[in-house]
Length: 133
Length: 375
Picture 1 (spheres, rainbow over the protein chains, first blue to last red):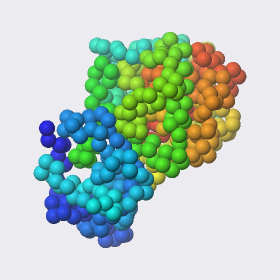
Picture 2: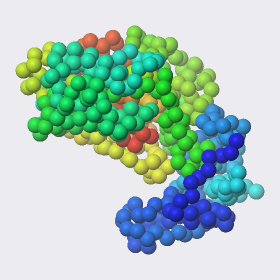
Picture 3: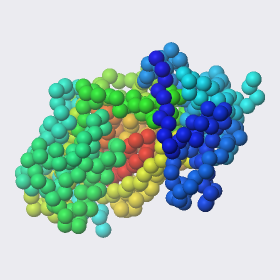
Picture 4: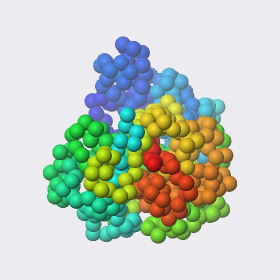
């Protein structure tokens, strides 16, 4: 059973191309400096167009996390229990991800570092605790 | 001045639970018929239809499909989409339309059949993030629940107390879908669903419908309505941002909805004798109590312990069982219970109710509306 596949569109193709190259990118607005994810055509702060893509340093912190004990999709059935987390990058944007650590060790504010992993042929941005091997 | 100018003239609902073979339109019609009977008015008096879109199956022109089934060609007929806040927003928009002279008598209603129909909405993939396993309505609330625990050290007994109170109240309600009481030990013993959420933190999945008749107090007198309940305060405000993106997870614009409703009513939290707080998940009740000013941020855990929110306590909550026990229907059952409490006809009647408060909210705390009823 394959994972649900992200839909690559002209709007987000630079995001997925970045991950294919092993880096996480976010958008920033050349007019007002606002930075965000996921991809949008207009800056949600000043509403202007022309957003540019920028490479994230790859460090951030855990805002919250959950642990699934039930699968809502067959692809995740044999991964139970698995976690899903919100991570805030040091540059500001937030994203949904998985934390590569035992569930009991995850904590709000925990420092994490990007680890791009291939899953069924798609590179996904996951995060491991800073200092973990 | 809106305070007391409009009333809920009648309320009605279907059975709650599993109602196979019924369309949402059919369920809505039954609830509307009962609400009109309760108000004691003829259908021909109705010239406004404000219906919340069914959660599990969206249809275009739903307000018109329902109006046709009701045999009405209303001056205002509209379907509202704010998730669970749409019911009480519908009441507010009906009052505004009546105030403006654009209609006189409105039906505000909702129906859904996810229990015998499709539950896919609740298990849905959350966009491209489904690749990480990010699915379901429950998981969004689990994120908020976890962050509240992380920021405030909220003990599991606080979440349990909310579920235990709802289930105690539901057990006394002959119309409730789930009448099995729950103990704190039973709450803690249940397996996690999406941790930290356990089974009893989560709303029921229910078929059913509910409806209200809204009109001016003056029109209610002209029509001879016997048990009209005045609307004292209304507010709404919307956090709107997806849970992933909102800067704060543990407080919402519920705060602003309540501030506006209290200001309109000229009341504060201390003036409320009974509250119906939207309990799709237990975390919602704790955060709403904090955002409404019933207790300071992070202090709801102390507020809900020791039976204070149960019938007989300082502030009985969800006295018919709420979404956790009466029916998982998103919100109108709470308004109906508040109407019963003000009328003095509730099964678990709270003595001396002068002011009853209701919260409705939708999405993953994306939307919020507040209503204060009283004599």
